Image (cartoon, rainbow, N blue to C red; front, top):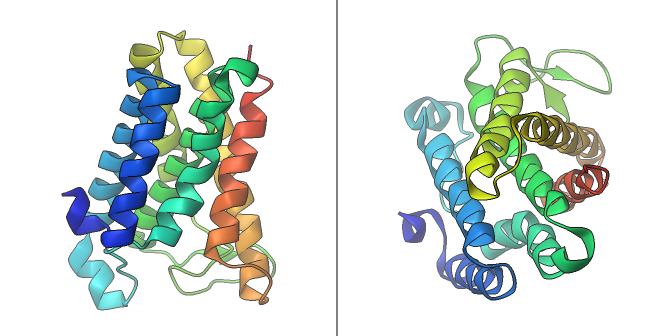
Length: 206
């Protein structure tokens, strides 16, 4: 399934990230990354026909996509002896939150609202949010938090805070998307900012 989702370079890079996660973090860190990958596959494939009809279906992912979503969590795994587990978990929650929002939010009946003008725009427009997308964003982040309860043995209250942090990261991605539409930055930079925002939020979780 992973090889179908990724091109050859993306597959190699994802395998490298997995090896780094296991060597520097252990099975817990690798498990959470695999959960992220599995959920990404599921939400990408969900509603595929409708997405194809709208011209917003992006199935095969390149190494740039893997790097933009995985480099910050990977760095946070390597530096976990310094910063602890929460920046990593919240960064993953942010990436997942953004993935849920972008892949499932576009399936809503109502058009999203562009943050800069507050006007309706076409589904899939960077910098736009919708009610469904926001709900899905929260769901994605909370799923990661819930999984971390079992993987990292954190408390449910901490998992909820991680979910909030994930949503914050996703919203930062949306703000960055406004600049994308203005020709400043791209999806790569927006994804990076999303995961960084989640990681920073995680620094304040005790």
